[in-house]
Image 1 (cartoon, rainbow, N blue to C red):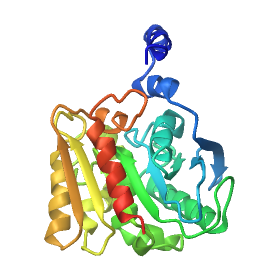
Image 2 (cartoon, rainbow, N blue to C red; image 1 turned 45 degrees about the vertical axis):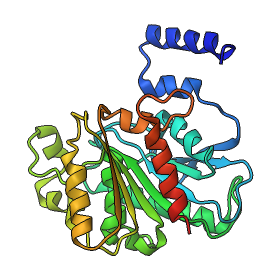
Image 3 (tube, rainbow, N blue to C red; image 1 turned 90 degrees about the vertical axis):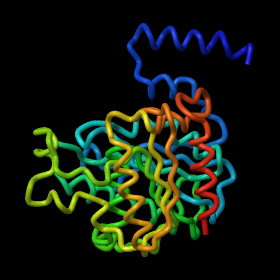
Length: 289
């Protein structure tokens, strides 16, 4: 640690001077050992129709795959911000796919969810057929997302229409992990979000409306200091799953804010609560089948 400290302090100074975001700093200090990164695999036409793949050394035909959907309020964000998530889960033995998807104003709801479904289908096919550094096989498949990405991933897991259109269904999933997700956010007050979620399709944007108890097991996590997405949305989603006989685990972390719900995954320098990463990994390992 003493040999690493000067480099860490130097990176902190550079990031402060350059105005780095928390993800940029975490990526700067994240190890690149123990896994292979394959960037910009294509799942759809266009600038944002690609995903990055993180394959742990020694991956087998049964290594679980986690598709992580990034956040960004449906009008921002990029897979380029999340190598630290790829490293975090790859270092625990999981293949990680992080797709981009079209965002507002290029699309409105449900365009970005359709992109998510196409990305999941492409990743599932890669798992079946094999690809760069990934043996063909029967890879358990998980969906995971943070913030807006959790809403997208939740709709894929709970509203079966999306996966069905790309030749999959909820039974193809081993589980869903939602970090600080908006699952029950009607009525919409902000004009920005009214534009992203047009009135004609707004009711269908709420994952809580599609719970029927037959979905894969879910892990829902929220920070109690989150002022961006109210933790009550996680409670609402969990109540709906329990009421319909589904399987759900919840974790609520005092003092954890919205960004901390994802930065806690970092292994080099967790900015949040390290128990969150442990909880996610335990859930994924328990449900990998």
